[in-house]
Structures are given as structure tokens and as C-alpha cells.
Image 1 (tube, one colour):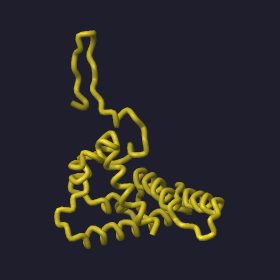
Image 2 (spheres, one colour; image 1 turned 90 degrees about the vertical axis):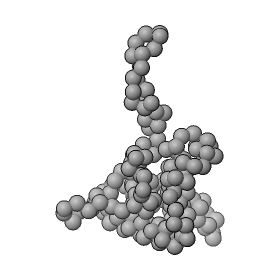
Image 3 (cartoon, helix red, strand yellow; image 1 turned 60 degrees about the horizontal axis):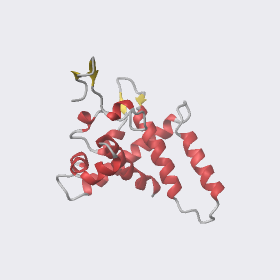
Image 4 (spheres, one colour; image 1 turned 90 degrees about the horizontal axis):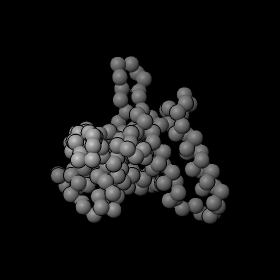
Length: 167
């Protein structure tokens, strides 16, 4: 059990950890799984509005957008076929996603539009039991190919967002 201790025969007390806790990958900023229960993917991209009018964009949102925007930009079909143009497009988008005073509005607008698209997609699905987290948990093949449940969740989020950004 994660976070517990046990005593081994070979000496000493051992702590248990989950593999996702010791590996630092792009999904480590993802909210804990317990916070994802009952939420839809679009709710992960609604930015928080505190008491002031300044909105806060989480590290998870910024990193997820960065990964998905790069993936979406690479899937765009360039009529001219110029690899330099594709590279420059991705480089410009990455610059827009860096944290500074000029890009905040771009990221906030991107989060808002992505939230609206995901919410519409959820509302127009005819499945009243559209629980993406439960579907991910029930899909042993996804978990097996990803390695861990958190990686499978991360992949599900990427596979949902990337096509929307590419369109």
C-alpha cells in the first residue's frame, strides 16, 4: 500500500512508494486521481478565478497545453510541405505558451476555448454515463500499454485534447 511502512527480514524499515511518485514526467503536475473522480476533462482546463480579477493558470494546464499544442501542430497538413515552416510554427506556439506578461491572455483564451469545445463535446455525447476516468480504469489494455494508471489517464487527456487543437 502506497505510503505505508514495513519491516523486512534483511534489516530495517522500508517505505512503500508508487512508481509514479519517483519518476518525474510530464504528468507529475496532474491533480491526484482522487481529485479527478466525478470531473470531466473540460473541468481540468477551467482557470481559477480568485477574489481578484487575476486568473491563475496551473502548471498542469500550461504543461498539458504545451505538449498537446506541439502534437497538434505537428499533425497539421502543410500544403507547401516545408519542414522549416512546421518547425517555426511549433516554435512560435511554444513561445506563446511560456510564462510572461504578454502570453497570459493567449493561454487564458486557449484554456477558455478548449474548455468550451470539451464541454460541448461532453454535452452532445448521447452517453449519460460518460465517465472518462472510469472508462480509463476499465480499459486494461490502455493501462497495460501505458504502464500505470496515471500514465493511462495522461494519455487519455492528450488523446482528447490534441485533435481539438489540430482542427
